[in-house]
Length: 198
Length: 198
Image (tube, rainbow over all chains, first blue to last red; front, side, top):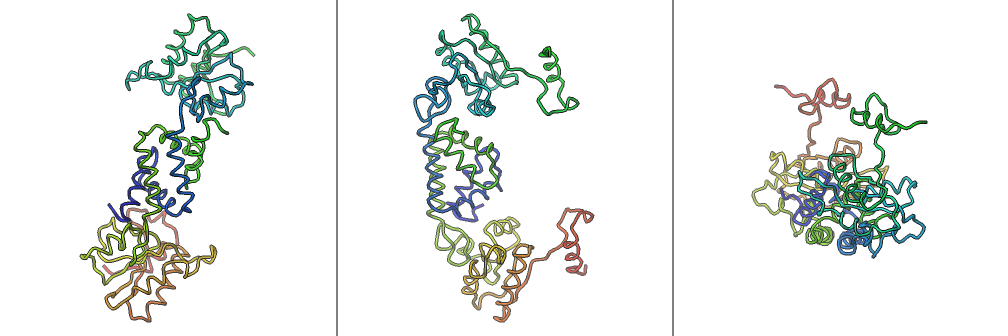
């Protein structure tokens, strides 16, 4: 239905194509943009173009960056002997927010999934193998605890172990602040399996 | 926190400024845009610029349009003797979706609100008075059933009645499909007040 003219409808349709934005939200967002000051709307449009044009993969860890190396890889105070392998830049950001990890990352940009026809060559595994050198002592596999994430972790560990690198997997168990009564059975079994002496 | 470089962060911040979009959603949307095909991202940016540059108020009803008159005002099959006054283009679209109303609209772009310092001169009331002519037999006030919408309706009706025009207000009552048990008291009183013989 074309109630507002083509320009407005076009904008609504673009918003409606974004993930998690339904028809009513798309309308609300479009009207917000139309009521924005002109320079703010221009800056918004420019930020979309910039993000497409300027963003590239970090030459080392495949994080998104505007430069040759991302801020983490180019930070000399990070511990370059440890590499944490994650599926997405957002997973990396989640670990960065903990402030606990001082090593480097490697971002796979996905996980192996035969169902969705994603094989090892479709994610950044060869880039990971290419950066393995004598400096790297440990690779921590922090892919998601899903079928795809687990399979990817196993696949990578089989490639790295023969190279004499310590390969570890993040712990799975009962999340902090949760109630054991409501935790699913697989997580409970994993928590039991991964128990540690105190 | 700058994990992904300036271009990505800039885009995330622009999304996060939109209404109803939190930090995590803004991140998800930004990553979606980064993974879009380049021409789709360009079209999205262009649609924002177009919406700001091309959209104007319909010279007659103040609806948003790309042309001098909106599609409804320029449609000769609409009944130009009836004008429905609504607060926003979205309210107009909601009535259009019913398919029941064949007259014209007038969009106020807001409602009078002393609390938010919005007076009669800040919404499109003078544009409504300017378009009143002998053709117009009835003005239907379909502002929202809120304090602001009611006040605006009363204000407009006082201006129009001396001009000899039939002024009506949409009915308020129990919404279809609802359960009377859970309907608020003000709505129930209005439903009783507005009862009709069957």
